[in-house]
Image 1 (tube, rainbow, N blue to C red):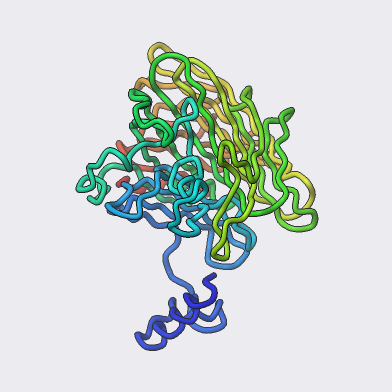
Image 2 (cartoon, one colour; image 1 turned 180 degrees about the vertical axis):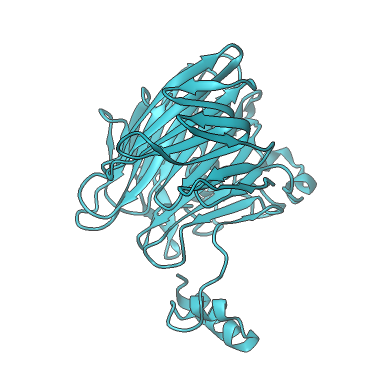
Length: 399
């Protein structure tokens, strides 16, 4: 919900222009009606918003796949935000002022955003000077599909990476591709692929609102600790699982663990999940918000798949209700990959099974077929095809 001046402004404009949705936002739901749309993509800006609904306890995520703009630039390509149960857990830190201050400079870098660093270097778009390109449309550059079961968005940062303290140090030839999958309405998968040559340390950064956060190295999980309040878990799998986990709050050297809140700089925890390996790196993060207890009860595992020149990752998500979600995420090649009873030829395949292992629904993104037991989906190039529990197939085109 909006607050303060923005809330009053939305209320006034809603009444003046007859916008029931603005009035709803400006009165915190007391008047008007919520917007009729759900998850949306803004192709020119490169923004995607995934939501389960418009009530306070619903879940939504924001994904920035766009160009940086021609002014007020922040190095925040592929930045994510997560909200659930009335709480913004993972957020954009904003900016506090325009003073010549190390923390203010930090707010403009990707080190203050929920994306990745490579060898301690940040995204380096601001200093390239191609402002005409940065201010142009992102239309046609990103993937977006939205269905009944899944929302999927994918963007890419092709470098370079650099450092404000040494502008002569640039790392080229490393590409970060991030895919965000909303498994409606319960959780998200963040699929990170970092490609290039040689050994590099890749660090995923997760900036939380001011709250108690723990990094559990044993289970490769970052979890908020809000006692009787709702919480969120970031369950790190794939190449992240054997990485280094740490939390940084109010660090001055290097600057890390701050957000801009209430027009001032405030300490806030940043979880760093880092892995040094020969590229490519394929990381899987399940973001699961939950109400009660100290843990979500989700169990997530991954394993590598390969068949000839085709390779990918199998992701298993065991839910507390007994349902199991299985995904095949293809990285390279165009062949089929197999895992357990699942065979998929496509960019992403998804099957939900009940407690007896019977498929109840499925989805296929940008592929030709998905098979699991007696279930068979025929896909479309660039689009999403879903099978409902009733066995009906629905398709959504990609943008």
